[in-house]
Amino acid sequence: MNQDQEHLRLLSVFHYVVGGITALFALFPVFHLVIGLVMLLAPGSFEGADEAPPAFFAWFFVIFAAVFIAIGWILAAAIITTGRFLAKRKHHLFCLIVAGIE
Image 1 (cartoon, helix red, strand yellow):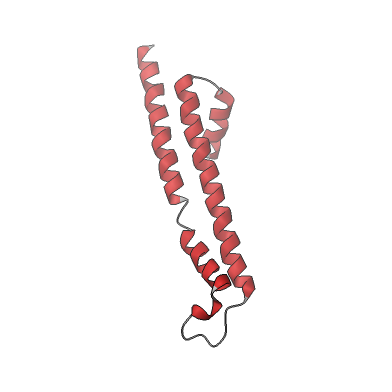
Image 2: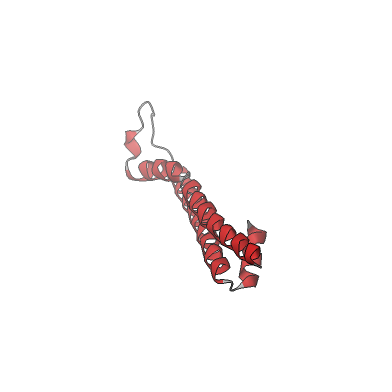
């Protein structure tokens, strides 16, 4: 029984680590978000361009990046919460659902 408790403790710690890494990797689309915001707020800042890029492209970049960042952070929060629940040995169904999503 002691070995089972140690395995659950390790699994909980690893969920914290994976949740942090997931949150970090969810920030990769920030580059697209910045480009979209620059296209919206300062359209004349692109050198060599005869015209400003259409607003559709700017909004596409902003919305695409924001959605992916939000989904990544929600997943990271769910993984970290699962680690907490595993440590407390509660909410088994939630842990199984998040494991299936992972």
